[in-house]
Amino acid sequence: MCALATEWPSGSSSRSFSEREAGRIMFDSRLFEGRTVVLTGAGRGIGAAVLEAFLHCGARVIAHGGRAPPAGGPDGLSDARQDGRVQMFYSDFSTSDGVTRFAEFVRDSTHEIDVLINNAGTMVGRFPAETLTNDQYASIVQLNQTSVVELTRELLPLLQRGQYPAIVNTVSISARMGGSAGSSIYAGTKAFVATYSKALARELAASGIRVNCVSPGTIATDFHERYSSPEKLEATRLSIPLQRLGTAEDCAPAYVFLAAHALSGYVTGQVLEINGGQFIG
Image 1 (cartoon, helix red, strand yellow):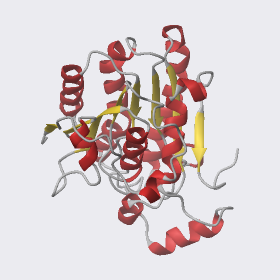
Image 2: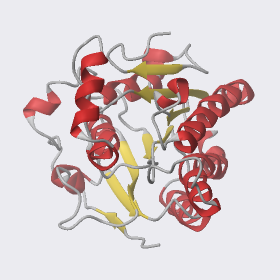
Image 3: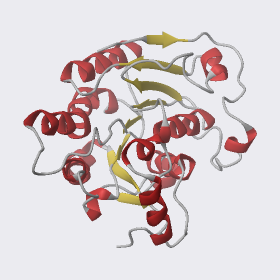
Image 4: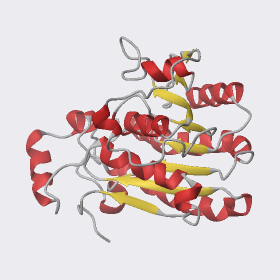
């Protein structure tokens, strides 16, 4: 329920992350120059890597950083703070009120957006089917499914004013493979978002809004530190044709590609799988 909005003054135009990280971003640094990107779940993992990628490409980003600010503030964003290219807001998307307050912050910050990336969400916990409570079920659905619908609905008027607008939603390999024990509802919510995105792509095509999804496989972030054992991750790694777990930086370019009209202007209603061959089909 905690919210914090931060804006930073103009200044340096240097980039916000290391040469090693920047070297992995092969897109033009002006690709999103003058464009506004709204990104949820930007505080860590894949979301943080996506934020850095769009900053590298010249975007102004209005970001939802999570439920509450981390100790010491966002990492690696000092240059972007000085540039005034990042605005960070914190609220709890496990409640509709948290989504509404972020949408209001976006509307107060801009009159149009070019890209909406719905990335916020997590497993919440592993809940066996026989002991799953109504409250657990409702919390997973609200965070991973309902918040996507709510925020998309709230921001569609701003997207309709954007130039070549695009929506990119994060789903999961579990949407296709069903997930592992205790994650059935999480997998179901991700499958919902994938199908919702395809339907939305048809509905919004007449407005010129493209809608696609990125579907990460097993990615080495704190998500799996919380919900998977080292033994389970090693067994998964051995089953992946590329013989390694993915990284957040492996995923980030897919979001840039699907958001950029110049790169994917004829792509809509698709789910791009980023999983090293863990799922092929």
